[in-house]
Length: 238
Ligand code: ADP
Ligand code: MG
Image (cartoon, rainbow, N blue to C red):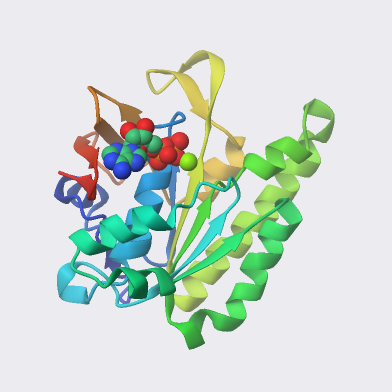
């Protein structure tokens, strides 16, 4: 896969863990409990993708699909300043779409295909992937339909990532489970559909204060290492 490129996360330890950064032609899942920093990393990547290649970016724009109304332009301004970008320009290079339900979320991505090349989009962020699906298709009786729709959506994301050589990042929540999953009393939502759909799965967990620990799980290709980072005013840092 010759033309695969990487978007730096802006955190050296995290880039090393990922083997260079967030990959194009792939889907990277960010999973972890509430407040761990998934949305913060999404903001950071939407800025990092704009940097020139020698600074870790792809000189591209981001499409930011927000399902939970947690996108904060002022956070982009802080991160962009720290990375040496003009904050207003950085904001203009993030094409923002609020998705009000799961159908809307799918339509936004489908429509986006038309503008990926003309706008120079190199990153699609879906924050969060499953929230609407879980809310709209609750319980066992709706599980099959929910998983089928989710599968369709992830398939669409994969095709877009591959066809346009762009990176796709989505966030996922954790749910409690009775037995232990990779040493955790929690597991990612979305079951097998998400597990098989994500190319890389990055598990984030909290440590002391503003420190966080990241680990790639479910991957035979990655070592069982961990990366440390912290969340600061300037964004995510080593
Ligand atoms: P998630 O999306 O995983 O639920 P967030 O990405 O919203 O979590 O992360 C929220 C956390 O990010 C906050 O608890 C705080 O620790 C950190 N954070 C957010 N904004 C700032 C900031 N301006 N300065 C420092 N830390 C911040
Ligand atoms: Mg969030």
